[in-house]
Amino acid sequence: MRALVDDLKDRNYFGVILTGGEPTLHPELPKIAEYARAQGLHVRMITNGWRLAEPDFASQLADAGLQHVHVSVYSVRPEIEEKLRGVAGTLPRAFQAVDLVSRLGMTVDINCVINRLNADHLDENIDYWIRNHPQVRHFVWNNLDPSMGRAEVNQAQFVPRLRDFEVSLHRALKRLAETGRTFRVEKVPLCYMTEFAWASTETRKIIKGEERIVHFLDEKQTVRQTEWDHLYAEACSICSLRTICGGLFDRGNAYDPNELYPLFVPLRSVVEKVLSDRSDPSFSGQSYQDWLQSFRLRLTDARSEWERTKTNTIPVGQVTDEGQRLYLKKRRAEARRAGQLGIRMELESQRK
Ligand code: SF4
Image (tube, rainbow, N blue to C red):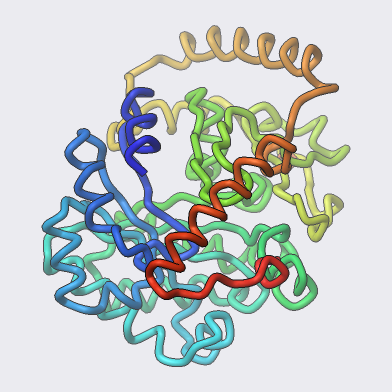
């Protein structure tokens, strides 16, 4: 973990997000947070809030230097949350964690994975948060990745149609904007969040030319994400936001590209909104004209790079022989450590 944190520091990254799985299960989490903070990184964590509802544990992390927490909640309807979590009683603990974290001086956001079961009431969730936990000022939505874990084998049950959440997402974002709160949305094509296109994480990264490094602890290993190699439909070719849109994130072949429809809105206003955001840690004050010039160069470079490497590029997330070798090596080390701690590892067949 030290090596991974050092790598982010060497790249001059602003911060690190400790995520999972569930990072609070890691026995050395406070130590990791402490080390990352000592290296000058802004330290955040994404958690379901279960362990963080314990005052001693939360204080330990606050003392270690954790600054910001994203608590993941799918739905404020207990029956939906319980079905998605597979365990009863997680919702009250997540609420407790949110309030506890705030009392301890850390900032807290709410993360929500959009799926078929919550798609129709994203706005109801927001109303609840505003009413009952008004200290939460920032919200993050992720549309479900249909290639991951149990989503992959239960696609029909959990993967939403884009149209299922279009209205409720719009209402939710509007309500947040009206109350002065901020938000980001990931893996949602811009045609399903047009008025708030500037809040798309992929779009912001494309505009700013930012990369994202993910140090996976499984067989994917380290992934450097500089391009958003998502799906586009024929309709995208005439869309005014095509060059700054992440398209349809669909590694699991569960979404329907026919749901995409072209936009005819000005690209400039979206770009200017992102460039003028002073709350963004990477704010540089760049003008639209300067941006346009450098963006055209970046586009030309990206196209020639794509032409050059299209036959041997490894898509993000694809398992290579080298990745597999390193993964198995790491699993053997984990098994040894688990043996010392008296913990049983799950079988490889159960990891799918
Ligand atoms: S039509 Fe295509 S390029 Fe345009 S917003 Fe939708 S997904 Fe993005």
